Amino acid sequence: MTYKLNNPALEKINSPIILLFPDGSQKNYDLGTDLVNDSFNSYYIISEIVAKNNVILLRLEITESLYNSWTGEEQTFF
Image 1 (cartoon, rainbow, N blue to C red):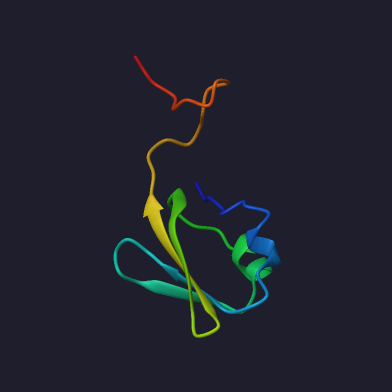
Image 2 (cartoon, rainbow, N blue to C red):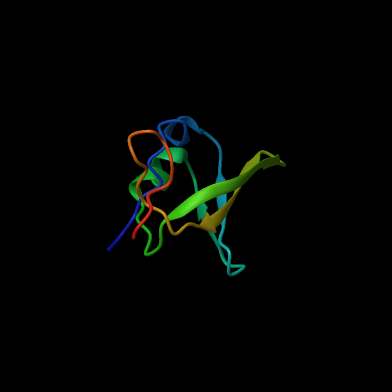
């Protein structure tokens, strides 16, 4: 299964982006539209956003929960 970073605000970034993955690797993008069109093997959330030297650094974190209940709480399994 593949996942995307589906955040409409990411498409509006018009400067280079560097994704920093939890394992220490990184991936570069020219624009936010390139980032939202890419897919990943894990479900990530953005844990930190930093602007440095005209580049946006996005630190990612793997999350286990994919879905929220209608009240906005994390899904639980019994």
